[in-house]
Image (cartoon, rainbow, N blue to C red; front, top):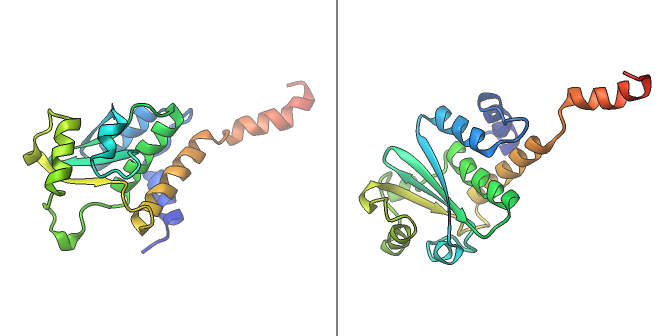
Length: 174
């Protein structure tokens, strides 16, 4: 299996990172690439922490035909975008339920109850799996975190053509 850097390069060729950065556009591009709608919802962090999210950062809920990403509403805009990029990383890197647990095996009843409290409009029957940030040491979590870091770095990096104009033409009065 290719390293995370090679996988990121391939994914960013297929799903360009918007410049200037626009999270809504990026989520839309990922949804189109995957052929599944993705909605993003800020939620109360205390409820999120009870949903199996460790520190209460973010949660990916895969329904039968769409995906939902939730994140703590009390975080900064940059951190919220990083959390969403992390969860998108899980999706794009093929993370999901362990195959040994069964493809349709939802999370524990406690997690499903927490999701029902978070988003009452989602029926427990429609949830295929819930992937929260609970095991920060796992390879999947490290890869999703690296993916989010790379997305945010690429999004914030100045365009090469504007850098050339700024440095080369600045001293020439152009």
